[in-house]
Image 1 (tube, helix red, strand yellow):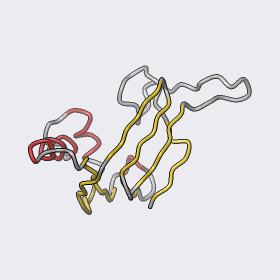
Image 2 (cartoon, rainbow, N blue to C red; image 1 turned 90 degrees about the vertical axis):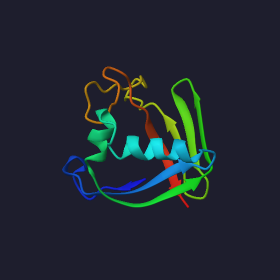
Image 3 (cartoon, helix red, strand yellow; image 1 turned 135 degrees about the vertical axis):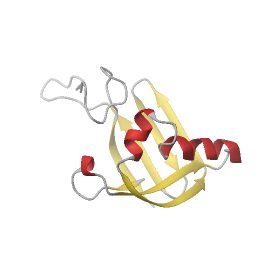
Image 4 (cartoon, one colour; image 1 turned 180 degrees about the horizontal axis):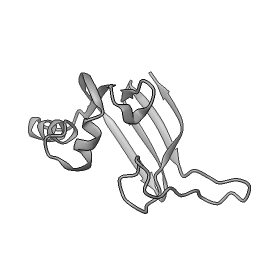
Length: 118
């Protein structure tokens, strides 16, 4: 989870990293290395935008996907449902290509249609 003050690409994000409580210590360290940018690649690019990691929290995490829709829950922290963006007026699925926020070139990103924090 992150607070992004203004332009997302300007950096200065304040983040709380949520790690599944079922992860063992080695898995937690691997995730922290990856999302902390130590392993390079796209996650290092993302990590460069984070100005401060406020906390690392271990919580039960549920992630379900069916076709292009899904659900994410970090117990007591966040609940989100995801569906593809629908274009108007014909209802077709919108696509974004080469977006700064798409990790797989040429693939549709999935956006949150609703969310609530606890």
